[in-house]
Image (cartoon, rainbow, N blue to C red; front, side):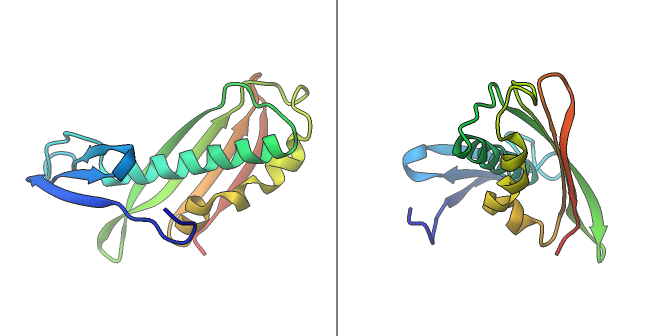
Length: 153
């Protein structure tokens, strides 16, 4: 996969169950939840949410490591909301919470890394053109150290 293109192959297996082929990384099943599908795998909306949370987490990790900081155990949770847009069901909002495994005081250059990490996230910056993505980062003591709210561009 080059830096400017990527490809994923899908094959319909039955009903709304698709096999997604990531090439050398293997296959994944995706299915719509009931009543449309049978819920035999993550939904496309769930895969989108995972992509946003993964990209944000990786971007924060990259920014921290560029600043010689170790975030410890980094975890993330993303919650999506559906809404009607021009009568069609759409993913309208994501709330992302990222938790660091270290305290704010023990993480040098945290402020600098947090100030820039969102710009590194290709997926979130692309998705934000149509979906609100709000982000909160907490340290291991549960202290809120960053929040950003973004409406679609």
